Length: 195
Length: 195
DNA sequence: TGCGTCAATTTACACGGTGTAAATAAACCG
DNA sequence: CGGTTTATTTACACCGTGTAAATTGACGCA
Image (tube, rainbow over all chains, first blue to last red; front, side):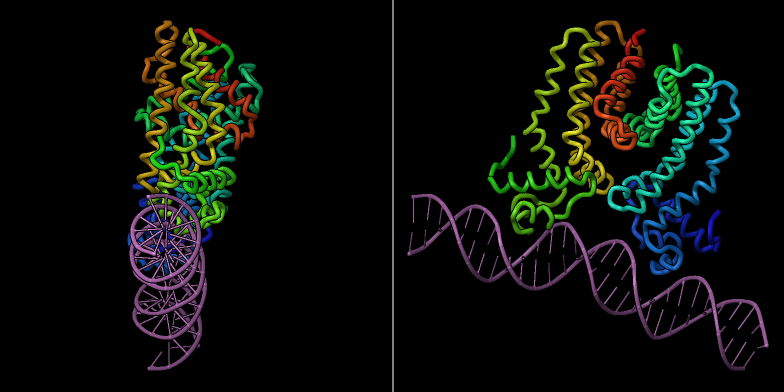
């Protein structure tokens, strides 16, 4: 899926990735990334048109390495809607911490950079598809408490990265507590007469 | 509460405020603010040490003008815990759109600027107090479903600005729907056997 | 050996935005 | 009138991004 697999390109992506991860949202400078990749600053521009595109490429590379598609696809094998909801929350919820560093950076850049906003928007739209599918499964079971759109929006928000950040970083909830509580909230608000 | 009330200082704050509001998160440049305030760029530095402090002062000024304290205090007059929860959600939830422009800017700057992070953190800590008070009232009624801390964290997250932004901006929920649904979620997850 | 080419390096520079500094002007007040 | 405050103008240092150009080194190939 990547247009170029030259080893230095990969080295650069890895360097960017590590820097963003160690300092989420702060958006490392080009010179930092270059140094970490063992490459001159100008060399970065041989592989990426600008800083924003480098970061976008970093997220895409990350998705490739981790295989988001397969991961989220797993939840599709669940039989009942409720099982599927749980599986999706667990799959996505446990994926967030792995991508948080890069994701946060792109989220922050979104405010000032149109390309970053577009890239981030697409990524979140993909995620919403997963929410919609889980909600649909619930609805087919006749277990949905709300209209589909509202339910999808709500689940989408519950599973958003800022929500994860708020609970695990600001409130210092351990990851397991986050998963457990979000699952609880989702069930109580979305599933008909369920605890 | 403000240390200086010179008319130009106020004009500058108002200009910054309007600019941030019309373009949330993008962080207007000093020259833009100066132009809007009808003042030279350098004059800004006579009133504020730097850009970050100007924005921090802008939020404080805003809180003064709007009177957050009184607004949130109103929810304290409710008798039962449930009424109080509802009142708090409505008060704060309807306050968010008024401050969103400036708030978002500070949130974005938080990532790169320590002073902004500190100021924003304090503001959010204040808000958490309100959540804690509402939860406490619920608990006194014996109507709380969770331990106090977890419940407070959850309500705090539910009422966070990113959550509001996600639902009203990304999902284009009207403000009333936001209030109604958040109230619903809060009740279902926090209040013992309530719909 | 020599040529072309590709990747990367070095050096230099333009641009935009922040913040500092200094000299000047205008308004106000005693 | 002189002093103080407030703001203005101009200039500049600094930093980070992105563009450009000249240079080097390695590789394959005839």
